[in-house]
Image (cartoon, rainbow, N blue to C red; front, top):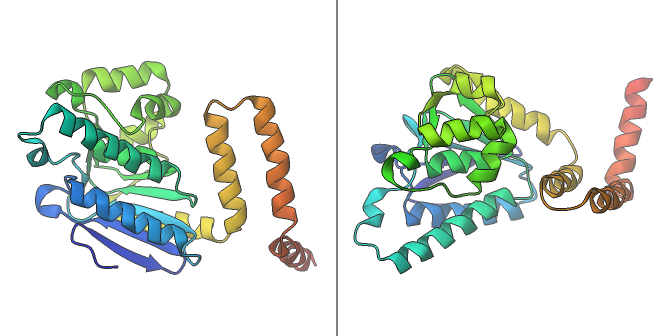
Length: 254
């Protein structure tokens, strides 16, 4: 897979997408989003890939939207852009395999929202993370209104969005915005290690668990969710992989 704005690699069962516009701190333009959507489609269909890591080249994860793209844009054109941006975020949120954001540096605006759309976030201690929208008379996208509150609670979410201040990866970990914070030189090793732990498990189970978690976080009633849990468990135990797993477990107990 050859792209201009991203780099795609597969390490064992782990897909890695690197945002690759380091000269502009991986600012996101339409081409980057288009190429990322294409890569997600390919990686999603690749049965060898069981987990995905998204990170950035150079000093940034992503500083958000490339403002050069917005010059002279009409309101209608801006609406079309925002609709395509939201659809891209939905594609990441709905990606059936577990996703990890390895935040190596600046993660601002829609770059930060990209990390929020991932299932797990690991940040470099010194990374700077934030939503600057209120400073530039804009507003958040990518489901951030909900995703930030889900992670840190309403009060902290309001503080972060109202002040538009950046926080470090270390602080983001302390408040629960990211799962882990590690020195930059350890970041990819930590992300790969996490992905390897995930990939050691059943891809089918992971798919169903991720779907169930999404349902639980949404508008589905508890009753409907519990009905889904029954069907998910039955689907898992009906596979040949289930019997193999039981046999391997029994061998380990001997």
